[in-house]
Length: 149
Image 1 (cartoon, rainbow, N blue to C red):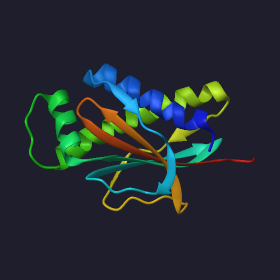
Image 2: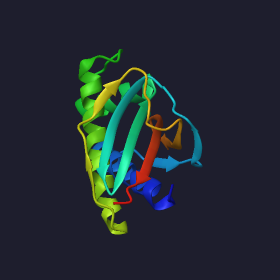
Image 3: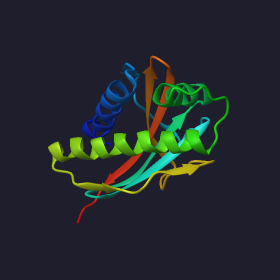
Image 4: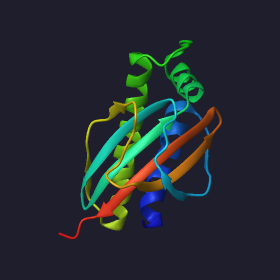
């Protein structure tokens, strides 16, 4: 997978976390692996010049802290309110990533976010983009393919 595709998602996540949450973000090395399952998992599919699946995996502690920053409420479990808030963050990040991808002449549409218990992609392996934020880790599992049409 081309680095600019992965970097589009990193840049979008970094921007959204900073603007919406005032949280700094750094990335670790990207590597190929089997998809991870980590607390709250939100999936978005891409269609267009690139097709595939993006799975955001949030450990429970990170998810709760994000929503605390957004809502000002202290929460202790991953309920529908938390998952809805995380889905909105993922939707905004992926929308911004789609805009970044246009710089590379790639036009994509995103599906609405979906909460999944056991994440999967079309392929056995995907690219893992591990993010370190000021409030905890977030994993982006990225599986994209270029359409040859």
